[in-house]
Length: 616
Image (cartoon, rainbow, N blue to C red; front, top):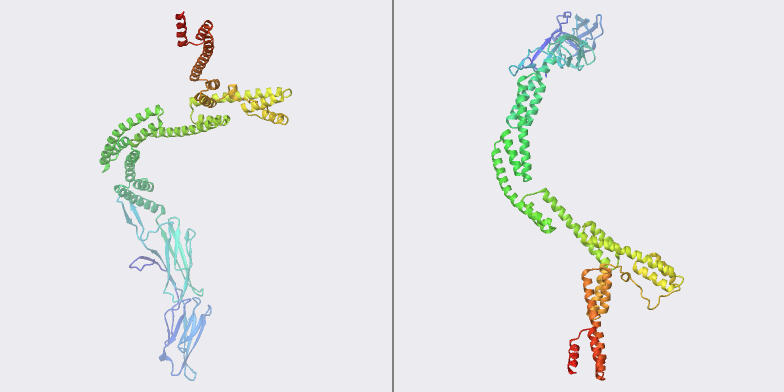
């Protein structure tokens, strides 16, 4: 902003315009100098006007234009007009009495002047440069102006103009004007040198009020100022970086110090300081990473690793509570060693159960182990055991479903379930049963096909027997061929009332469950005393599912039956011998008694024979 001389530095560049002097009569007064574009006022002293008299005015140019806006004021005592140029204006004032008679005349030649235009440079604050050696600013001389920077000029009319007015500026080709038509203007010159400035003033009607010219010297290259500014900013940034470092804001300090070096690469003090700060920051960050990792190790209960990191970090970059953290880590590490020993014992115990397929016990001890010391390996093993138990449960469920199907005689469905069970949990016993069931199904299919072929061969010559074979084929293993044969023959043929339809077990083709069912029937017969029927069924079951135990039991039953038959035969012989003895045929009776002993030993008969021999 523009300041008075006591507040700012103002340089006046004055332009002097020569104008003719003004002459006035003794009774006409000119109110100040006349200026182009501004109203000029002439007046007659009241004491010079006759009583009840008047003043007559005449205004005419000499060589220029007629003045603008000529008017009379104060009852004709004053005459006002606006000169349009600097040419003289002739003004005639005549005094008349009350009768209108001219008693005195005065001719005045008014020569208007142009306004003087003062051009000043407005400097709000003197420029300052940085002294790198003293690390402080120093002010330049007040008249120092910088290139490529707006310089503010101010124009003013001398004397001041009473109405509205404007300015028109102009400059040389090397100078750029940044505004027009106002009192304040900014110029900018790209390099040092002298700028030539012209300004013209106009009133509101566009009448030229005056013209002025001046020169403005630009003496400071902008590069010099910019370099000084960057050096100043660099030093201030470095000082702030040091303050940040002292307040332990290390990262911000290094970043700001790097910025300071970029601003002033030639400042060795800043560059050396940055190198030292960077080296220390590297040590700090390394220690910080070690401490951060120690926190993670602590969270993961890796107390030995945490302790190692804290000790190294304290050597690299000591901190106030570093030793306290190390002591805490040592206590945790010692406690963990004790826990680890107990956890190892629990894990070894769990492993022993695991090896013996005692999975539930293994899980219990594994869980106790990781409750003391976490172990990814143990957790992984527990997950595998749990998955294994799920598979075993699935396998047991599939096996149970397969067993139910097998008991219902749905062998193919049973085979599918057993296969699913084996996929979930391979089991040697179930695998053997699965293969046996596969063999049974295959044998049943082959036997069913053979029976169908027999039926087909008998169909023409013995339809009833052919129908029986088809039904036996369906009973052994359901198949479409036998079913169609039954449908075809059943239209005209019926099975005999006493026809026995053989099943798989009659051909020795059955499952263990089939054998168990037959054994249960045999056991019922045996309990009812039907040993013959039981023996036949036992042999039938043995033919389907041979076993050493059943073989021994059948052999024992055969011995019982043989003994029974021998006793019955001997008893029949003894009955006949008794009849002969009663009939007096003693010799024939004794011979038959002796023959019965060959069939079955009998102590009583032996004693009777000996008694009869003694009696002779």
